[in-house]
Image (cartoon, rainbow, N blue to C red):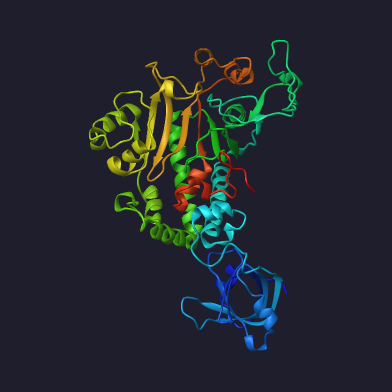
Length: 477
């Protein structure tokens, strides 16, 4: 008999049918009641074993973590809190689990402990919920852009270009590290390397994406990116996924419209598709926050926060206006900010971004027209000569979630900016060609997918929203 998913059994409209279910034992109590879960839903289904007619050897093997197959009748449950249960007529142990050694016992585990057991943590309620939400969000991303007629482009993971100009990149080489070939100047001879030049793992697919937008009109990338930034924080990963649309003929205002519409769509989609998982994650967050001081607790519950984004128009504020607000704010005057805002040109920190969203405007905020010297070389220079057509979207509890800009489409201006920053024109000759041949106004943005999952699930550490986190000094699993 083909097995039926637990989710489908719990949503069934007919009972007293013979069914088969397979999954993993969450708990087994009174030698009679198995809580079975197969990953299709946060909810378990209760399986009632006829223990009097089941061999003791079999009952002893029904332990937390064991894989089992149960055949029986789907019946209305006599217990509270559940609609159906399975009256088991046949039980088979598919895979044993040593109760003494299995780490995921049915009790509360610390998130740190679960990270150390990342290969098994997805068997817990919280991580099952997070990964189902992540999967649905991923589908929503493609759904949005495909419905809008965007072309999905796979940009290279290995590249010779540094899109951000920060230099924090992982080098890719096939050279023997214990005997590196040298040229006449005594430097490493990259001509002898696999690609014949210095190459890295990509930090962004943007530059290559722009070339496709200038032919296909509107494209998006959704793939892995890498930063060799030695930041051991709850907001940074060395390997993460980025969503990057690029659109020809869009200016900064069009770009802000697209980003706002896109975020609303994916959040609305996951609210509709994952109600049980989100309800569970909201409860998990409330429990976690009880241990925090009142001042550190979120002002909004998880579902309230998600609806807050859907129901409030994103407030559009220039960087200059934001600096004035922050400089005159109470926490700045009383030196409550860790980074005090004294003058125009400061690079805003998470505490400033959250103040603007959560305290001042009480809505999501889009900041635009940033100082040129704190933004990347490819952003379009404004007529004032000191700001660029950049934009960041700020969310409650998380700060920046999207960064984007209108790109510098003028060849001469782009070349001057590259020279000023010491960026080699020869390395990016192909990028400059898009400004030589049929250049036009175009814009795009980047959204770190894990930041989005972090916001939607209510988790507080980015290492808990990706299957196997890659961080400084950690590449386990």
